[in-house]
Image 1: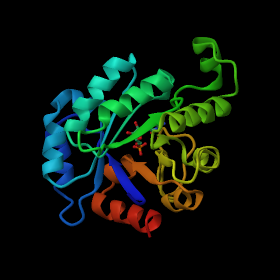
Image 2: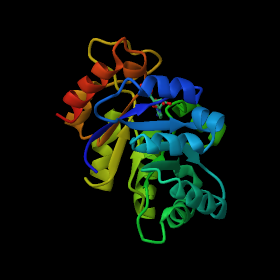
Image 3: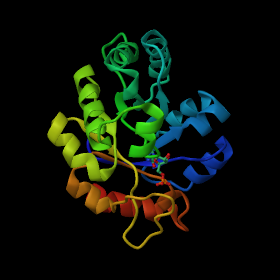
Length: 232
Ligand code: C5P
């Protein structure tokens, strides 16, 4: 798979999601389904969007004992998603088990991406709540290296970290980066942002874009602008 723009479909229902996606009459965007929509609508929402021709990143961030994650990943793989994810904090053995579960009998599987430290976790919370005393950048790179060691395809990270992740884990290790904003747009609650063009320059493989597209007055134009800036 090459560089692509993934639209974060952070909607509460199938109806809102389809109303939004109905606007895309040309190119069918790669879409991210998160916990809210998946828990509201169940696996059928994945089947429905697949049937409409979308690639799917199922963002459920699994984290449990290896055996449970392995069996759950087998279920997600049968849903025919294109990309899914888990928490690297679940350890290398959990990530290896996830890959096993995800691999279909014919050897194919969805891409598997790890979350390192959530961007909502800062140094202070990591130290005080999790008793992890190392600098957060080092922890993020260590988790990324663990994901690579386990055989995963990449990590979710800030576009600002994408270059360093590639340096640590190799050019082929994918970086999936949220926190993208247009140069002339609202940054909302995101703190460290980059434009699609900057994310391209720094080596992101996929950008995940929510509100700059979903809340735009012309979402299709905003999506095409992302594609033009990021994919070229
Ligand atoms: O609307 P916005 O472009 O900020 O949406 C970004 C998407 O990426 C949301 O679905 C958000 O949950 C997700 N995300 C993020 N930062 C992370 C991980 C995921 O913004 N570190």
